[in-house]
Image (cartoon, rainbow, N blue to C red; front, top):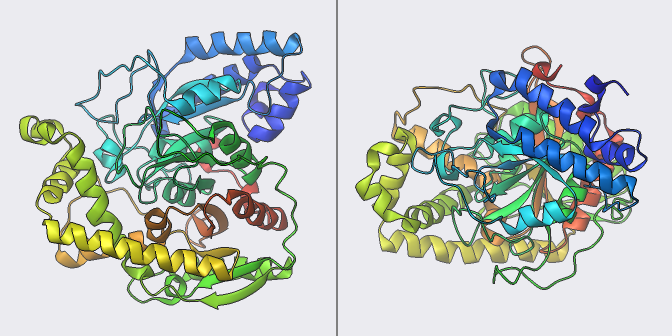
Length: 477
C-alpha cells in the first residue's frame, strides 16, 4: 500500500493490516510523522511530537508482531494524547506558560494501558489552557478546525479533535469535564465518547473538576472509538473513584441490531428556546432520529425539565473546582495565564458558597432526572451542540451580559451527562449547506451508567446506515 493511503485508513482497518503484516507499524508511524510535519503547521494540533521515540516503539511493535506476539487491535496504532495527561519523560504543559517545562516522572494509567496494548504515542496534543476556555487561550497558539481553518475545533480537547480529523493520528485520547470530548468531536465531524464517570482511571491526569473529569476517545469511526475505550477502561487501584465492574468487549457489541431498543428524544434540547438551536442542526438530528426508527428502534419523546439549565450548573461547579486545585498560581502568577483563563479563574474565586451549594443540589436533581428517564428508555438523543463550529476570534472577550448568558447556556446540550456521570457519545449526522462542503453537525447519544456498549451499538448502527463520515476535511487532502 502507498504510504499516502495509510493515514486514510481507520484505526480498525490499520490494525487489521498490521496484524496481517500488510503494513508495518514503522510504515504507519512514518506516514503520520510525514503528515504532521507537512499539515500540522496549518492546524497546530500538536504541542510536542515524539518522533524518535515513536519510531523506536514502532520497531519494537513490528518485531513483536513478527514473533507472533500480537497484543490486540491497538498494537502498532499511532495515537495522540491530550497534553493534560501525564507522560513519563515527556513534558505535559496543560497548554499553559506556567506548566510549559513540567516533565512528569511517571505515566498516567491510561498511558500505561495504551502501552500495554501496543499503541504508539506520536505526541501530545494542544488544548485550551488548563482545559478551560476557548482555543485561543493556549500558550502554544490556537488549534484550527480542519474543515475550515478560520473556525474553532471545539473546547477544550482542541488538538484531539483537529489531529484526528486531519489524519494526523489514527485515534486520540481526550478529557471531558463539561463536554470537552463531545464538543470537539461535534465540531470536527468525529466520534467522541465520554465514558461513565469511574469507568476510566484519572490517575496521572491534571484535572479540571475532580467529580466530572472523564478520559475517553475521539476517533474517526464508532469501531475505532470502541477499540480505543476498550484499551483504557477498567478498575485502577491508584484511582479510588474507578469502579470494579467488568469491561465488555465493546467491538463485539457493535451488532447493528436496534430492533425493540427504546430511544428517548429530549424535547427541551431539541425545541427549547433558551439554547438557541441552529435550524440546520435541529433538522440534522431529526433526520438522524428517523434513521434510528427505520432501523427498528422505538422512538418516543421524553422530558428533562432542568436540561436547559445544566450549562449554568456545570460551570458554577467546575470553575470553582479547577481554580481551587492550585490557588497560589492565581495569586502569585496571574500574568502567566492567558487573559481568558485569568478572567475565568478570577470570576470563579468570587462565586459565593451559597451559589456553589445550590449548584450541587441542582446537580443531584439533574442526575435524578437523567437516571429516571434511562429507566424508561435505553438511550437518550439530542444535539451535541447548538451551532456548528464558530469563527475563532483572537481578540475574544465577553462584551455583554447577554453574550455571557448565551455562552453559559450553550453548555446545556452536554451538561446533563457531565452532571449525572452517564456515558454520552457525539456522532456526525450531517453538514451545513454553507461554505465549501459545509461544516459538521452532530447528534448526541447517552446511556445508562456503565452501559457504553449500548451507546456504541446505537451509534454504530446509525453510522453504517449513512455515509457522512466518508467526507474528509479539505486540509487533510
